[in-house]
Length: 610
Image (cartoon, rainbow, N blue to C red):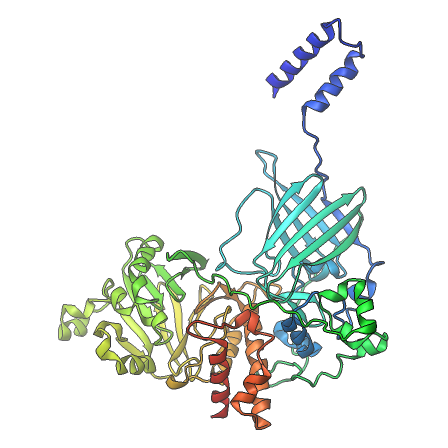
């Protein structure tokens, strides 16, 4: 920089010596030269204390939007049906009480805002901005150092993962990895596949926060909202602790909701404000002035348009490799072996929960070597007999060794120590044994349990296998690492698709729901219904209790709908024609593959019919 300024001054001196140069005062000319030599610094610092302005949309932001008000929202049919089934009493369920507004919605609340710069001490470069919002006390980091977004199988949070960059004097923020949230907090959802782009624009003491939500599941086109703040350097933001309580006594696992066609509150908004009922149901066309003319003389098709069911996206690495994700404590997650694998390691060796598909066994073993170099594989715990959980048993167990001695070795010989121990519920042995001629003997469990629970103590940690009867199959187990506070669920919980219900092997929808409620009994969130006990699902991203809660609610709502239709005497064909899962299909359904939406519907119906 010194050399550059020196060259600039020398050029200035030569320019002044030029007799053809107009005689401008020397100091002024030097200032002009210096200003034009450097690019304009257009970034306007947003850091400080900010107070929200409510004059634009106070009724929605303070008392809250009215039930059935979807006017101007570019929502899909699935989003509308979710809204019509939503019951505000859901918010009294303890697990829902401390859920905060996600980062794309939190500015809409009574949201005093603080923005803080995080500066690298050595370089004095801004590494990130941090925000704190008074509503629920949520905090968020917006990274400014160019780091990439995490892979799709990483955890999702209420605030998501945000990166920012300056575009002139406007800060543009891109956020992914958001938990399921709200487009409007009267039941209209925003999915966990949404991408949110925000713009912070400061005009002296005013800050405009523009939020653009793109959601392939619940929006037909991007949805834009703006929120205004004014500088308030003297404001004081109080803490916002939250502790859930039992407000209403309900049966275990009850989920308040409206069955299709029974929500009598949906039309109140339209009737109260003399708005055509079809207009109040929303849709992209209701955002535009031309819609008034449409309402005068033509039949209304508000919201009939819906996106094609989106691809669920990669819940596991698409490159065919095994990727390691650090969870917490002594537990990691291996993604990419067909199903997720939990790995715990320590001085006693390595313990796996599930073995993945057989073709991935070599890569799984190589990944074990990276996590726990030199440590022997001692245990493989199978959550079920399904091939994506037990397929690699034989190949991996052969590479391990069992801790054995005493009379066992004396009676059996040194072979008692060969191979890792494979542990599962006895029904896994029964199911695998039934097809044993086509399986090597080493694929079978070497140790089984028949009770509700089996306990191990390994690497200084209690490890519990908890049997869930008649869930996906009749041999499913949860595996809980008590010290690490990590729970592996097998296929009872798969956050990106409907659960498999294997009727031929004892599966039932009520068993899966019982398993999900058991997971909720075990898990404890750290703060704001997030973190704490981490959950490794059978497939999909790393989760926590809030993700399981969303999934449990979905399956309970669907079960209740099916039971109502069965009680009314509807046949399977009539149930399929009624499309009882269409509001959830864009998130969890599939038209092709080994487990389709149609297969799920049939399994739920037959399970309840039995």
